[in-house]
Image (cartoon, rainbow, N blue to C red; front, side, top):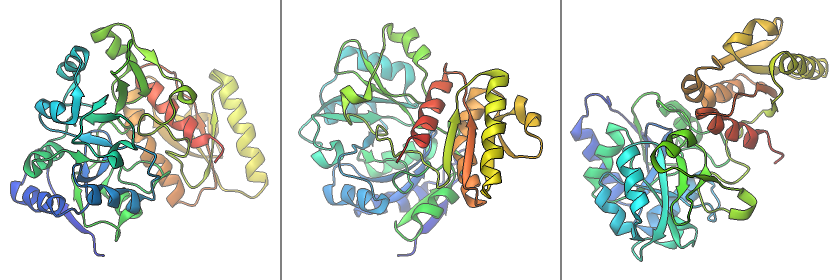
Length: 340
């Protein structure tokens, strides 16, 4: 099929174009659209056949649940049969924004959206295009990241074209996304609430609002949330993550890079800005300053995709401090570096 691309300025929404995209969703087709985190691949969350197309286009396993995106907090009561007070407190504090809440699902929600779990993941995105599209369709929109399953998430419309061009009906080009990593996923069906996936809202910010927060252990949880499979976020190149600190980190990376170059492989290093000059004679891409984690998060997936486009076979990445958005970045790097 031919994928139509609609350019929309997020600061000046063209409602005529939004209506065109909304009609595709209403017909049961797929529309990729920007959110503040990454680009999502959207379908009518209440249309089973449309939702099935998401899994087919991405090559995504059906045991990996989807997030339902809403534009009105009242929709929580349609999608969930039990909305605890803490969920409303979190929604008031962080919505619209990069926080997904896992709640007990209502009968309205099909098992294809939830991977047959008794819970549903819901969020309200902080992006004018996404919110306008959801309002115009008048239905929740199920949307995982708009990439081929297991690949790095898309932060530009071109990334979506690279992965899904010709496989979906429409892409809304709203420019580069701001946050760059997916939403934080929080299970509010348990006490204390549990972080199932680190993301755009830090654990520190969550604790400021609700106090105690537990970090989930994936082996205990199974796949209760999107993004918990180890094959997520992977570039085509082999990624090696070096988590040592300071000079020891730099020395390890230089040693590894030299080792693979001698083998005739094309090696790239993803480094913090302050370490860039310590890798003379090596190919380096800068993720940002180690202290500017918002910038690092926004650049992460685009850098990994650029390494792939340029034919690198090995990517060696510097680890970052695990506080604030650093936790989300490191979670994704570890998954990308995990054995497949």
